[in-house]
Amino acid sequence: MTGFDVVVIGGGHAGAEAAAAASRMGARTLLLTQNLETIGQMSCNPAIGGIAKGTVVREVDALGGIMGRATDRARIQFRMLNRSKGPAVWSPRAQCDRGLYRRAVRGELERLPNVRFGQGTVARLELVGGRVTGVVTTDGRRYRAGAVVLTAGTFLRGRIHLGLETQIPAGRAGEPPALEVAQDIEQLGLTVERFKTGTPPRVDGGTIDLARLERQDGDPDSYWFSHHARAEHPEQLPCYLTHTGERLRDIITAHLRESALYGGAISGRGPRYCPSIEDKIVRFPEAERHQVFLEPEGLDTREMYVNGLSTSLPPGVQVEYLRSVPGLERVEMTRPGYAIEYDYYPPTQLDHTLRVRAVPGLYLAGQVNGTTGYEEAAGQGVVAGLNAAAAALDREPVVLGRQDGFIGILIDDLVTRGVDEPYRLFTSRSEFRLLHRQDNALRRLAPVAIRLGLFSDEERRGIEERLEAEDRVFRLAVDTAVRPEGANPVLADAGERSIGEPVRVIELAKRPGVRLVSLLAGAGVEVAPEEAAWAEVEIRYGGYLEREREMVAKLVELEGFELTGDLEYRLFASVSFEAREKLAVRRPSNLGQASRIPGVSPADLHALVMEVTKRRHR
Image 1 (cartoon, rainbow, N blue to C red):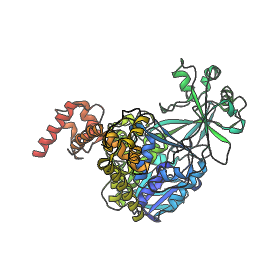
Image 2 (cartoon, helix red, strand yellow):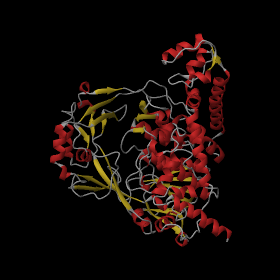
Image 3 (cartoon, rainbow, N blue to C red):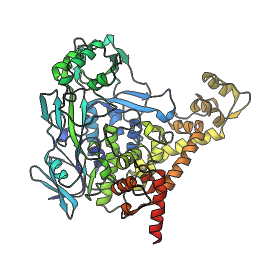
Image 4 (tube, one colour):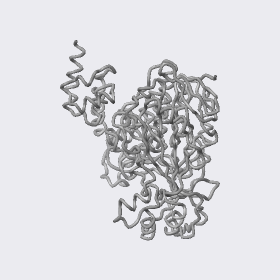
């Protein structure tokens, strides 16, 4: 038997981040996966980032993760979404070369000193006294572990659907499902449910009339997702936009009963915010058209991803509806789209470290927790990896709260509220979205990572220098006065009134549309735009930020009222029956978490405080 501190099952986005985080904590880590060639595989859309998700990538990077570093090496188009709106919703997004991304993830893992790799399918967990102590593969190999992180994605009893007739046991196209370990975990007593997700067809870009489509080029900005490295970006490629029409709607309607979802072959619920084309036609019958994005798969292939046409219809119908789309009349389909149904474990069975409460030593991350999306998986992977390592090394657990960022919000939502559909992050899920921006992720989370010892000395110095540079720009804005001849051209460009005497830069930078970098340049001070981004937001939105910080202080106060694990909630007569039942199941660790459990009212919280206080006095 080979021994490790942490064994990570699965090599997708959650598994890669879990292995990296555990390694950076100093744990001897094994990444065990069915196929070592598919570590970091982008199973669906070849893109990283987007609304809220781009901020998560930067938070993962601030905690020592690898998604941002890999994206910078593989991005073939970059866009900052929502740039016309406020900075709270600015969202970096990158199309990636699938092959480059996968190799970049593997390369980043190979550079970490404590990570080892193993190819194999886990059959069962080994337990001693109810605690996980290792894993056994289907070929009989045994690996001892202080903690295990399960990141199996859609592989747990996965089943692909192509219409009603074709059902293929698979974790994704061409790869077998994980059956034995799914059965083994169910026997541990965990609640198991089913979700479904889907992917659209891929097509040969050489058979598309691109001249008829709307071309979408990337932003020229030199933006990096990673705070720690400045990888050379590959050349950018365009995406293209077209739309469905009446003919596609008629084809889908005529063949709707051949869909695995609408024909009754699939019982699991799918993601509301990423519906299949069948869902769109049924749910929005009044819509005249739907957007279809053609996205390149890589630099060395003509294959394109057809974003917007996810489906579970038979392949023949897919070809028919593809050729009804303007510009795709002669298109050749290279791979059919499909739906996939898989096991997940309702995440209310976890605590905020992503540990299964009923099975010490077992941590879950990614789609097995009922989420959807590469970025959501990566955020969970970091937290599960850190805490698995902490448990194995007898260190304090690592808990990120709602006040810390989108990763904390993601985990708190999962654990306290649960899911009734595949969970996806949005900026609207954050009560503090002006505080949780993509430009300040390093400032928010790097201190946590440094305290945990996750960075090398060189990385730590780089972080300190970056934050000192941002602070310096803020001080320059406070201390520097700009004369009218330097400020007025900048103010005119922003449509703002001119000044007649010198004014401190910080006062003018509060005006809408006035760039801090340009004002400082007008005063004869040159600073890098990326170093000024944080200070500009802090200056312009200072009043709003202060109000959000007051909200954070109230949340921290609530979470300072601890609820111990031995509380007998069902005996608290002054608390409503519904709240007692839910508190007994969810077992929140503090009053803040209790307040976010559906069915627990403000009156219940007040009664809970009184009950707990009386118990403490006794």
